[in-house]
Each structure stands twice: as structure tokens, then as C-alpha cells.
Length: 326
Image (cartoon, one colour):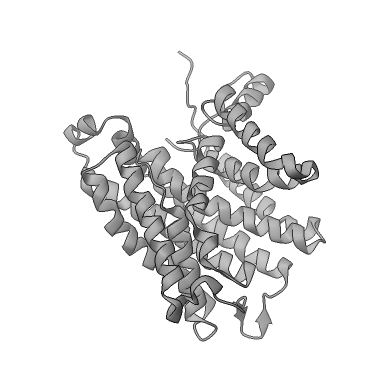
């Protein structure tokens, strides 16, 4: 019988991760334009947030529209801490804050499912947005927070787009490696068991409460770290940047890329971040063409655009492409 998901050898994995790190860092050498470096950093941040959502949706099977809210919490946490707190303290702290809040938000997933859960997380994002708008004393209200500085280590500043991209790329690499480890551990297998059949998973000894909460917390923490990275990238944040529409954008990344595939949201983040740039020459027709492209991908590639990569790999090698998670 043909093996549908052949295993990947340790040396192949090691080489693959080394190549991934080189690709993430390559814009520093390849691009001279500040805008292209900014776009590269933004794409990396999208990968982080979309990968977090993929853990919640693609592996644990829980629909969430809260990623924009957590992105905003992470961004404002970093911005409000200010330059007095070192970047390497503010970054994990933003993730930790979102991890704790994600645990609390995960409790509704124990009682509601599918579109009911989506409505709960949608409401959470709206509440975060309203707090950011109305608490002017802390958040600056609709005017936002200005002059968010980029990190420095001692006398070495990472203010330039190329230097800041080094930090973004390294954090992205570390979080993707962490997600890869988690999804290939007992946690990942439990998440997928819950997604496929909750009743059967519980009969097999999977603690539904603990694993559902953990999925929400990890996915939320990823968004929080993404927010802490996006705040100094922009240098300015305001509530409109974390409105509900942004959550749908992250959902689109996961679905277009390939739900439940480790590499799916990475490909989806690249498509959603970069395709609009290529379509800007179409001017006012750009939103229509972008929406049509997304619909066509979902209609003709229901498993996501990663299925096109699978098809090319099979045509070239005659073998099924090995999945990166068990």
C-alpha cells in the first residue's frame, strides 16, 4: 500500500529548517527598497498570526475571529510599556498577556461550537476595539499611540528596515519552530483528534477542556507577539488597525493557504500580503480582482493553495509530498 503521509528524515528536516531561516533573512540581502523590506517584515508577522489561528482552527477545529483583537492587545502592550522596558522583555510579555486572556476566551469553546463560537470570538474583537477607542487616557483613543521606537541592544539600534527585519525574521523562525514541535507532539495529535471527533477523542482519554483551552491560548499568544512586532514596524498604531475586518483577513490566510497543514498559513499569508501589491496596477478594480482570486482558489482548491504545491511535487517526483505534521 502507498504511504499517504511518508515520514521526513531528521537530516531532511534540518536542511529544510536551515533553508527556511535563509529565506526569511534573504530580503536583507535581496532588497534595497525600504518599502520591500517593510513588506517582507509585515509578511513574516502575518505568518506568525496566521500560524496561531491555524492551531486553533486547522488543528483543534475551533472557529475564532479574535486574532485581530489579540494583535491589538499585543501591539498596545508593547507601545504602552514604552522604551523604558527592554524589547526582549516587552515581546514575551505581550505574548504572555494574550496567552492568559486566550485561556479565558477559550472557556466558551467548552460549551459552544461552530458558528456560535465564531460569534463569541467576534464579540471579543469588537469589545477590544471599543476599549481601545474609548480608553483615551491609556490608548490615545481614536488618535492612537505615536513615536513607537524600534528595539536596540546596548549601543546597537535596529531602527533601519533591514536591521529590524533581522529581528522579525528570527522571531518568526523561532515561533514557527515552536509550533512545529508542538504540532508533532502529543498536543498536536490531541488537537487533531478533537477536530475529527470530540466524542471519540474523549473516549480515548483526551482531556477536551485542557486541550481546547491550550489551543486558544497558544494561538492568542502568537497573535500577541505579532502585535508586539507590528507596533514598532509601523511606528504608530490606532484602533482601526485592529478592527473586525482584520480577523477575517487572517481567516482568509488560513483557508486560502490550507487549513490543518503546517505550511498552509505560511503560503496563505504570502498570498494575502503580496497579491494586493501586484494588483495595485489595476487601481480601482483591485478589490474585485483580489476577492475573485480568493474565491477561485477556494472553489478549485478546496484544501487550499498548498494542494497546488502537492500536485507539483507529485508530478516532479511521482510521490506524495510528506506532510510536516504527523
